[in-house]
Each structure stands twice: as C-alpha cells, then as structure tokens.
Length: 292
Image (cartoon, rainbow, N blue to C red; front, side, top):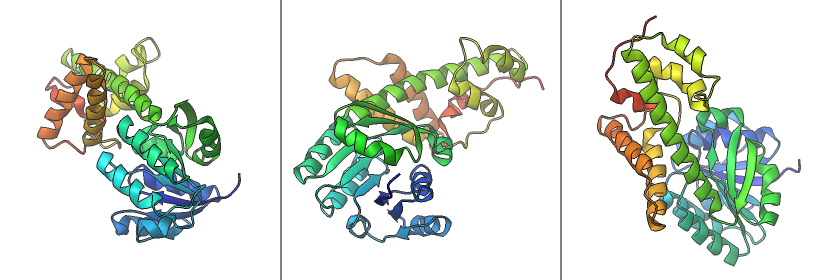
C-alpha cells in the first residue's frame, strides 16, 4: 500500500483506534482533537504528529478523515478543514450525519477541487479496536476506488452504496434494523428471566437458529449480567435514530417500531443512562433473576 500524508480529525472511542490503524499501516498521520489532551494521549501510544489546530493538521495532507459527533460538529470540522486543503486532496467523513449535510458538504468540497466521500461505519468500539468495521460509502466510483485502500486499514468491509449522501442513508437503515433487534432481544431476555429459565441454556438453544443475530451472540450474556459498558452509547443511538426518523418523515414514511424504541431509549436517558451502551434497553424490565 502506498503511504499517504493523512490528517485524522476526532479521536473518540471510534476515531482514536481508526487513526491508530492508519499509523500501523505505515501512513504518515497527523491528528487533531477538540480536547487536546486526547490527542496527546493518542500521540503517546501511536506513531504520528499531534496538531493543535485543524488548519495545521490538514495543510500538507493529501487525505483528511473525520470522525466527530453530530451534524453541527461535522459541518464545523469540515469547513475548517476544506478551506485549508489543497485541490486534488480527499475528504472522508466517518461521522454519522444527515444525508442532506453530506450532500451539502460534498458540493462545497467539490467546488474547491477536493474529492468527498461520506462513509459512516458500523461495528462499534470493538470493531474500531480490531480494525473490523463496516463502511457504507457515498461517493463516485472514482473517489471510492481512491479511498478504499486507505479505509481498508480499519474497515474489513467497504461497500459503495451510491453517490454522496447515500452512505448516510444506508447507515440509517443499519440503525433502524439494530433498534428493532435490540428491543426484541431485551424482551426475549426479560421473558426468559421472568420464567426463571437458565439464560445460558436458552442462549445455547436459540442462538444458532432463526433467532440468532450479532446482538444475541455479543450482548445476550452481558445484558443478563447487567453490564452495559460496551461502546456505542444511548446518546449516540438517539442522535442516529433522530436523523433516521427525520429522513423517514420527509418522505412520508411512518417508522412505528423505530419511534417506539427511540422513546424507550429516551427513558434510559431520563434515568441517567445516556452513556450506557444500546443493550441497556433491557434495564426497562424489572423481572426475576435467572437460575444460575
């Protein structure tokens, strides 16, 4: 793989490991984070340069990658970056945002001669740490071909969905599907516990059949143990579901189940659980304890 000068903007639970994989794959990485102490901590663990401003991070980069929070964050970071990027460079946004914002930013970057790709990811903190994320990409064929070798450093699966903005729409599909699966899993576990079943035995019986899923394989046991510190937080899931529901409403689609699950996540937030992972939906149930 050809080594590139890469600026990575945003070093949270996802961005930090992703930037680390780029460094491990031999790229020349320069990082920036709003909270500089996080950037300094990254610099102590990985080979790379820590920048104190976005302008400094991107000025010599041929590729700029961002992974931040919500639409306002993504817009502010992108605008600060592309005004300091050279024509011919590439901007990849891994932030989960609205499709409208992705399209708007793609137009702004292209007007400056900069390539754009929106590439929200799925796989959570574990996927980022293990370099096994899935990227849903919105870009031209040419830009996707250019970007794919770079993001393969931390994305085991890379799929071009269509033009700019379609990566974000695909991520909404992903979150809608996850919301229903996690709610079903929470209800199933609550029922098993209420019936005083051995939940480990139930898992062994059903996980390899039609009821099986990634969520069941990875979260059933920890949900049964009341452990909810596995990365992707309720606060972020509600942000993603808000974006999905707004997009659905705009095209006249009523996502009844997604609305319901979002309201359940709102209850978890109201009880102070915004930083718990998404499997904390099961906390809504006060049921019996499973047999040992």
